Image 1 (cartoon, one colour):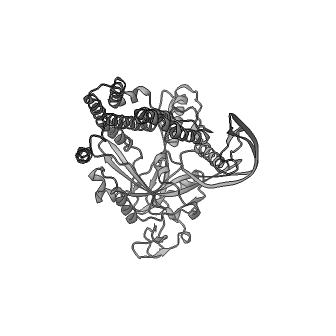
Image 2: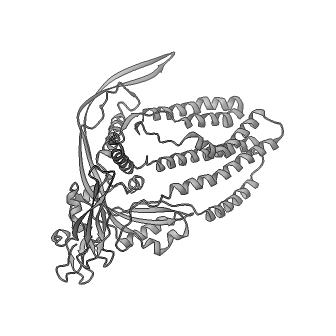
Image 3: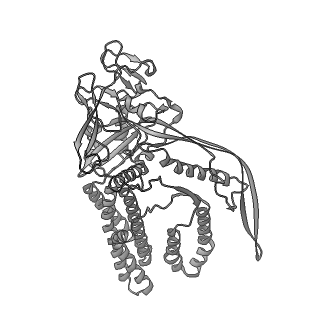
Length: 551
């Protein structure tokens, strides 16, 4: 730990002053002027126990115990803890030996946001969450924010040199379509520095991405004095896990910058060679970045809120309170009913009502499928590469111990590819044609041909020419049957509406009944959507290991 040279008390880093501050004698010191003289005492014990499954007939267990130099109490720390607090006297301590055993960090971004500012930012953002449970707004909960220095991998990419590729242009001249091909050669000078990704399997990638980016220009050479008064974890996710992802992202960015040039903006890129736009140099560094972290208990799960300790960017898991949701829904429904009551019947025609109900049902099905896919990715660690790699390594270790064979463990592979036309583009086009244009007869069909088709082709070309990044050989969609079961309610309403539309009964009552059934399916599906949202906004217990200190 760091000791005040004037009074001998524990001295901690103050984000507001950007100095080491002693609460006892009010001394302020520069973080670079103080050297860590005392650390927690470290003792290693080895115990031997009989083990019939071992070739030697026994197994050895090694335990490292850290004791506080202030009070002599045992410090609670897991394998990845770098900085923590004594559970007995509250003294801040940095386990320097943990840092020296790992890859030494090169930089650290000090905390800029104080705990008070962190609480104010949290309250401000929580005001926008109308359906948030009341317990999340209590001062007792907000006071539980903890400052943690999280390990991050920092990537630098560059590409310099000449590249060549093909381009194609199609244009109509009378009854002919003229195809023109080009050989494009250009010189590229691009550098992307300070791209960071968290190096801890215990820190969710979704939360880490949500509070990014950090301003790497404010990073300083690594010094443990900045950690005094905060928690810190060691890196347990290898840098290779994310390097391919960032390499593909940089490749897509270089592609977008080059193809957006006015000379080839309206041309299609063809004959791409492998690696044409890929960066040719990559460097990796390690640093510690500041994060304010809060966990709240929600039934048998946890919700998390994280705040970027440098920029104040916020990411929160906010579940929906069913009571607030139902009450507000009833109020909104009453207001909408009052508005619809005064709309003339000539405007609210049966066919139009049916179209609106089908659109709402399609939207609810899309939301259900999207949330179900995200939940599937969350439950299978497909959205958290660090945790997925850790579990693979653990599975490989168990397999080695049981059979002696080690299955291959590798980081996910990413690739850049040309975009494709999303299926919902065609669904929207068909719905617009059937329910909007077709009822107006020849005029509606002509409008669709003159305006709708060109707009559709423009959107399609934009999607095709877009450079996208995907994970190779990783299924990120929930099984179709699971989604079908949840979508049955609005789907039955859509089927009934389509049948009524094509049968075209003379009585308007059939249209209204079909629309009401469709809307009822949409309303019932909202409860499924809310349930999926609450699962996505909470996480299993525990996500982070237990910490000591002043928690």
